[in-house]
Structure formats: structure tokens, C-alpha cells
Image 1 (cartoon, rainbow, N blue to C red):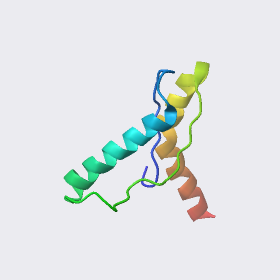
Image 2: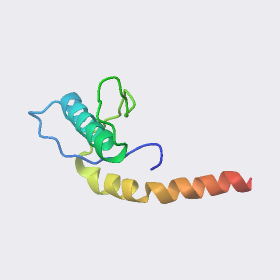
Image 3: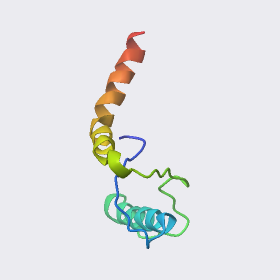
Image 4: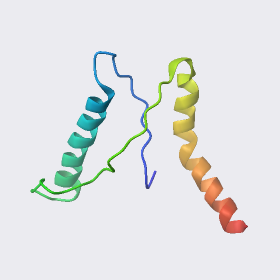
Length: 85
């Protein structure tokens, strides 16, 4: 999505969710700054928003995966609806 990302991750209980998200955000921000934005300096730069939302999935994992796959089309449909009205 242009303004947010949905991920469906499987994180073993021995790993902290906060540490896992911090790791993903940190490593991906460095890669984006270096490879896409051609920035060599990393200090003082920000890419991701501070927060994140986490929810356990359990038995409804297939429904969550389907929601993530269909999210872009739902947002486009909703935007078109608001433009028409």
C-alpha cells in the first residue's frame, strides 16, 4: 500500500515481538536508504513511523492472509466510492 504495510509473520515465542519488529524496521530502513535513496549517512534519518500494530492470528490465519492479499483492491474500491459521492 502507498502509506502502510501489512505483514503476516510467524514469530516463535522465544523472540520478543518488539525486538522482531525493531529488527525488521531497522534493517529495511538501512537497505532502503542505501539502495533506493542513495544515502550513505544513517544517523538522524527516519523512515518508518514509531508505532506498529500486532495481533495474534491463531486459527484464522487464512482469513488474515486473504485480507492482506485483497487489501489494495478494497482500498481502491472505497476510494472510488467516495469520489463518486
